Image (tube, rainbow, N blue to C red; front, top):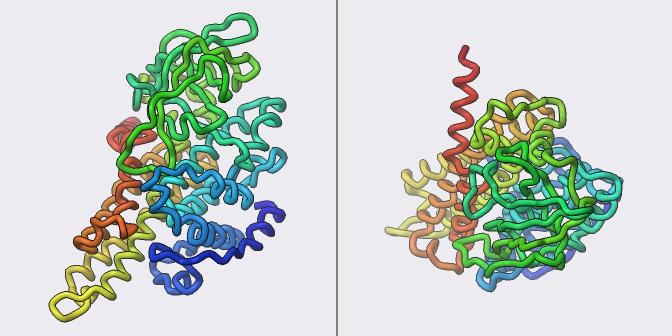
Length: 440
């Protein structure tokens, strides 16, 4: 992280009233059991910005997490405070205002922020992804136009791939972009768009050519563009601090100058995002399902990182509850069955963290095993971390089902991580195909 960003973060010392959901303060951070300490294996610099993210989560997010959920508040000002610490463009290049960090660094930050609010962190991760796409695949004019305001979060971004009829099979998307003069005319709709209607910049995958992945291009649609509208705000089980709406494009005129890359490079952009441009992936003999699944790998890690942060928080909450709650005349922490359950939760937490960080390094280094490792991480981490949070709720008994207790919100917020960015069933397909294709 740039020294200017680090110095700004070091000065973060706001003194905010604690709520009973405040998971990490300085005393509690010292009390983290060494066997689950998330700072293990990190460099001194990584430990520094991890601590900054934990502190921000504790002071600026956790006290408001329940209110944001209940009232469905999109916490714009809080996110702008996060952007002042460099979290609006974590892996965006410094020359356009980003922090220039690695995939592993990014995962560490998202894990820490998620202990304060999974839903808000998940949106921040989507915003970062959009910002990075423009930074990586945009030309100089596009980068200078969009990235600085996205890094400060003066403007917010949404990612528009999923459609009502194409989820995991993203290569079958139907949104069209017809070239007329110096504009594309977009028609179609996108579903389940995080930030939809409240954000300023929309990264839209659309069809400029024939069927399949080679006919897809990527364009930037700005809010207030004629022909751009939004559906109703969806009512969701979790992720309630970020609005979700359909994005509707009806004869929406978008300048050709807002296209990222060349026509037909939409899926290639995603492949280069995964492999750093070093591995050329041919689509001619690849099914839509295979390409669509591979396309999403570079966004798997944030979802897994957010799940990991929730699970870490829930292990802490479960441990604390077992220590204070008494039944049959003694603390629940004396019950061997619950001790075993807590031990299993901690073990799965650490195993998830190790796999996720290995996948992040593979992705950063453009290794040949990056696709499989990212699939394994998304599958294992989101499944196991949901189980950890769910078990923590069970340990709380009836209290865990009350909205006065943070554990239930962690359960609700991370459930969707097993569905989005490619379902975990698709992850299994990718892993199996990798194993079988290399068997000979």
